[in-house]
Length: 117
Image 1 (cartoon, rainbow, N blue to C red):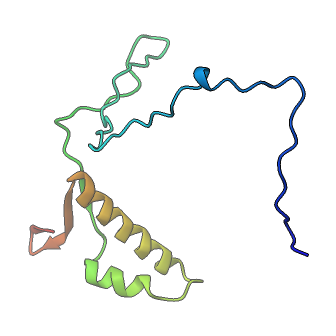
Image 2 (cartoon, rainbow, N blue to C red):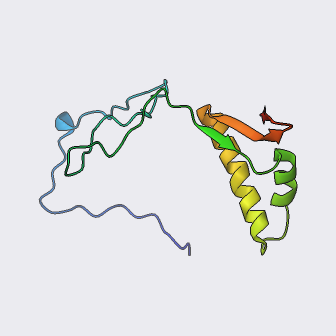
């Protein structure tokens, strides 16, 4: 004997199926990826009327890394009990996020000049 024998469904009293009233299932196809707005459009003000949230498009975000990315990759493969491993992993995630958003990355100061990644 099988675990789930096939059975005909029992009819429900008072339920009528009218095929003329059933509409076909329509699935909307979206082949183009819709961009997500990155600019906050609403304005929130404090009690004095000053805006609390500001996201100017012209603002350039700069990230200064504490070490070279190669050193961070080596440190990220360390012991999971060490905080330096987690710190290096966090910086590597921040580098990937900076590439995604087009932020400026500075790896450190070399002889008075910034070396850019």
